Image (cartoon, rainbow, N blue to C red):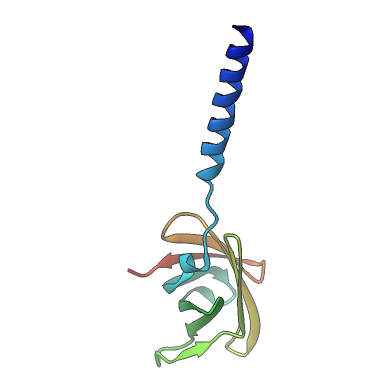
Length: 125
């Protein structure tokens, strides 16, 4: 009887742990696909919002951004996604910069530009 109780308790603990761990899903590159408005706060030129777009084809993610009012998209130098982290390198207004974002929820990601300025990305619907 005691052995049955311990086996049942062990099974319940194992199932609970399995269920809990399965709820922590790692976002795939598809999470970042589409249009985003990335706001970079408190730069020397003030707070700036940069329209961005990401797409993944054949396992490779590419990024694009709009630098000025012309609306012309420019391709980013590189984009990498590891787990729920996105890191994008690009040249904007003559500066080589990188942006790091981490998924917060389904439509919001947070991070920084150059590890100096807070950034928040919001999915454009």
